[in-house]
Length: 198
Image (cartoon, rainbow, N blue to C red):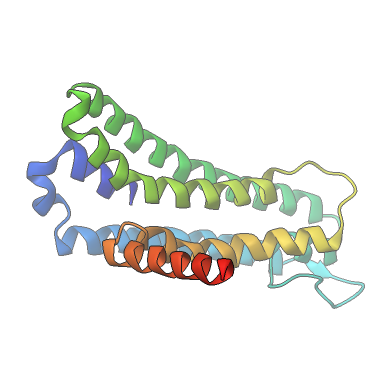
């Protein structure tokens, strides 16, 4: 999405060529391949550990941190640091690429007068930036939090927020640019306010 916004704003005349169906398919394929490779490395590293003690995971899903808490043996700390490093590197690498694309966008916008295209450019980027901030905000809380007394409920809540809330919010946030949706939401809110006053 960051690359799409970059091409739409910085290379508008080349958009149809750079974001052709073949180009989009390549971007999606590389994302899937990268995600699958990352998932395979992390899963292989964790499931090569020895597990002992309770066999219940106090979590919404099969998340990395609760699984590492169930592992025992001499390699657990090494695997935990390695898996954490891989996950943090992937998260920060993606964030760096997104920020780089937006740096190019801001540089391009500074070359044009404010009245011409700034509003359209910012409205194009706002929904994607909102999703990026929500996703990376929750991910950074999960992966970059300090060691210390942690409640199981807090870890579970953050895991649910990261894995469920972000995908749930994405279509809603991207739909807010749709004029029919905005009109319907305004009518619904106004009718609710009118009914509450009566």
